[in-house]
Length: 161
Image 1 (tube, one colour):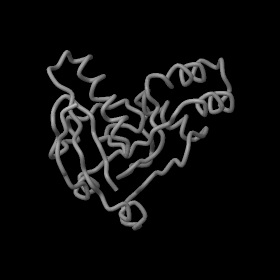
Image 2 (cartoon, rainbow, N blue to C red):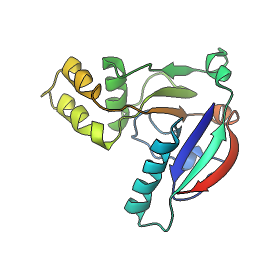
Image 3 (cartoon, rainbow, N blue to C red):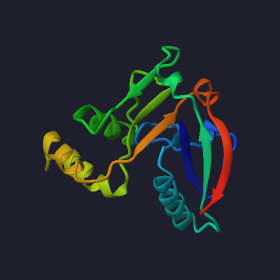
Image 4 (cartoon, one colour):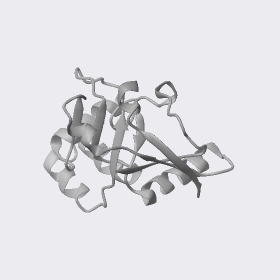
């Protein structure tokens, strides 16, 4: 499976210590199967950091490792109440009792976060929030939470956007 990571610098060897906490799936190295989504994210990071460039680092992983039983994996097939609670708790910095090597599921990007915020505030029920999220294009993300998981990631190249 080909994966992409958007940033302002090329990343050949991910460093978990440099990864932000309080993100969708917690502190991890984030990738997506969508070159389009990673390019958008690289441009967002470029604007926020007022950086000179936006780049996408490309990787490969044998997706069989996700199903090998050798790793602790959390898989969200789609946006569900369970996914919504997981994302909210991670963004609030509430750590899950379970630690994972990999987490895969939909991206809760900024355009979706308005819906998530309405759910957090009790304005929308979980079902209503999920229904609204269905109207958005939900890209996927695969996050790497351990050094053991990262060893499966093979760097290919970096693409300037």
